[in-house]
Image (cartoon, rainbow over all chains, first blue to last red):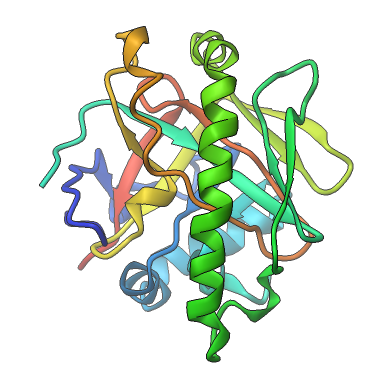
Amino acid sequence: MKCAQDTVIVPDISITEVSTDDKFDVVIVPGGEKGTELMEKNLAVGNLLQQHYENGRLVAAICAGKINRNDL
Amino acid sequence: MTEIKNLLLIEIFFDENRLHLSVDEQKKTEGTLPIYFNDESFLNDGRREKKRKCDGAAAARVLRLVDEMTHSYSLYTREHFLYSFVERKNTMFTSKKALLLLANGSEESEVVITLDVNKQNQLNQKFEMIYLSSIFGNRFFVVRELKSQLVQSMVTVNH
């Protein structure tokens, strides 16, 4: 995966491998317009953030990352 | 290109035109610096470029502050928790399990610093990518820790 400044990061897992039963204390969404647009279009991301938030857990968005779920 | 092996998460938030940086569990907020804007104007208009320039100036001051705090910071990274501040009450939040979402084009400079956290002497030299950040609504937070200890999973969303 190639980030905005060309840093290559190998993720541990795919979003499709995250179970809805997984409970995180915080989910962090970084900025970067292109990355944010990709996440915005991804239903699994939306569901994850929504569910996480509704369960009263912390959702953290940085910079443009917050446009992912401006309705939260 | 840089391949990241160890990740160090750093977050800085700004609130009411003040920049905050978390470094110490006891003091909670070690530094407060003035900045020139708030996050309301970030997207959608011509002020964006101006804001970015301001970001750089503020970030430079943060770098100096972080430099002064390196000792505290290196101690801090030994803790196996992720510390956050929630809302404006500066309530301490401790997380043992975090999820960092990344996609192609994500701004890595906001969440990662490439360094070997096992080599303490690198901490003085590698704070090169520290940016302002904000949280939607009235939630603000500060994050810092080792990926290996804290962020359970980095997730790609590119499909």
